[in-house]
Each structure stands twice: as C-alpha cells, then as structure tokens.
Picture (cartoon, rainbow, N blue to C red):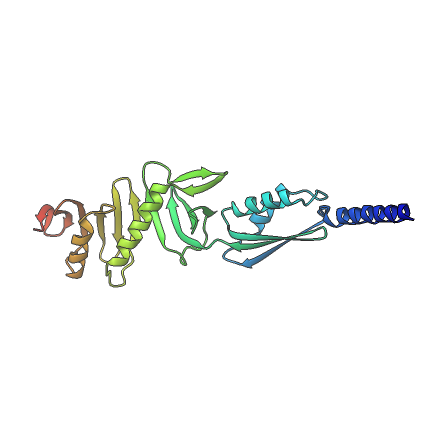
Length: 246
C-alpha cells in the first residue's frame, strides 16, 4: 500500500515537471508586430528593417535573445526607448521615437540631428521646422558609432554653447544664417547685408550684444574675435578700420 502511494507521488511529480517544462519552454517566433507609441518622424521602416535583419522566423524567443534584441533596438538612432512583449509566438516591438533637434548643413548635404545627437536622416526635404546650422570646419563633424553617424563631442558642445549665446541676444526678429567655422562662428544677415564673426565663447558676444542694441550695424563685415576690438570692413565711409571699444 505504501509503495502504491510512493509510485503515485512519483507519477504526479513527473507530470508536474513535464507541464512546467511545457509552459516555461521558449516560444518559437511566427509573427512580428511593430507599434510606434510616440511618433516623431517617418522612421518605422528604418527601424523594422534593422530588427528584421536581427531575427528569424522559427527561432526560440528565449529571455537572453529578447534582452539582446531590446538592447539592439534601443541602440538605433531613431529609438528613444522600446518595449518588447511576447504572446505565444507573436513578438510585439513597441517604439518611442527620438525627437529631432536641428538640421546641420555640411558639404552640400543636410542632416537631421536628433536629441541623442545621432543623424536621423540625410537629405532633409523640409527644414523650416528646425533650427538650421551650417558647418564649415575643415574636418567632418561626424564620428561613426555602431555603423551610424553621430556628431562629435566637440561639435555638440559648440552647438549647445552657440545656441545658448544666440538665445541671450535680442536680434529684433532677424534670423541670421549661422555657421560653425574652424575658428569660431559666422552670423550672416540679409537685411542689411552684414557678416559677423565671433569666437565660440569670450567677451566678443558681450560687445556684439551691446552694439546690436544700439543699432550700430550697417552693411559690412564685423569681426569680434579680437580682444576688446572689432575689425570693420566694407562700410561705405571706410574700407578697413580697427576701432577700440574701451
């Protein structure tokens, strides 16, 4: 009698172990769905292309694979964050897209830069919705990370500082063409036609702000990169003058 109960318990244990294996065994992939929870651009096709190159139908959806897949999706330039769900053999990839920050014009091409400083798109058709900066440095402003273009740290810092400087200055509604140079910044105004050269930092911005408040500028070229001095060229009354501002 006792042996019978022992055998019954053993059978129940084996059955439970088999059922546990069935329920915890990894599903096999038979369907993929992409859901854009937060849309910031037309990048769903780019994201799905990279994900589909990483997965194969019929493969086991193990915890390790799902963790690696999530990290891969998060590393894509267009993705701010993602979530992955599995139900049976269906894999759902939820995506929150990266917001664009600015457009950078370099070497006759336009690049849409995201908040993560990666290039989201090359060859931007509509630029009016974003701040536009020109890069006229001697070397490329980009580095390559995991096969994707990203702004160099030095260029990122220059753009952040430049943007804060521009926000401090009252330009009376005038929007200049802003260019990063190897040796500073160029602001180009159309009306009146004025070129202004400044360093990335320094006291030149303070002198530029004070003179812009006074309506000092007439058509010409103004260089504020010299300490306590502005070099003026192209004024109607004088071709080349160095004027101290002390």
